[in-house]
Length: 124
Image (cartoon, rainbow, N blue to C red):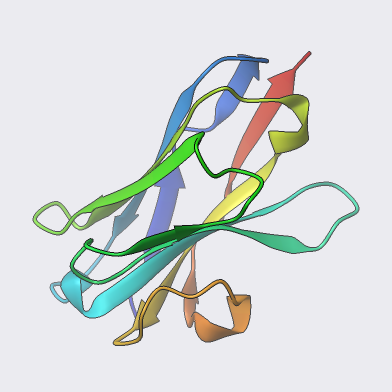
């Protein structure tokens, strides 16, 4: 299994931006489609965005469409989540996840590897 480590979280004011990174171990990163999920206090894990193995296909939750962008650099074994126009409702722990061979999915159960998460807090 691939090992995933997220970074880039922090505290930001409403309207601000952050870019999360997720670094993957191993030499087969391009074999994995990748996803970002988030979990706010007292809530279940929520799909945010996903990207195909090549990076040519992406999909987003309606709540972040137009504000967040998922991208990947297979040469660097890294997937990114650029977040703009942040609101307090975006406050959560953000997790990246990897799915071997399959396409990007909005379903958490489709992913076999998860990072430890990075906290994003948006103040009003």
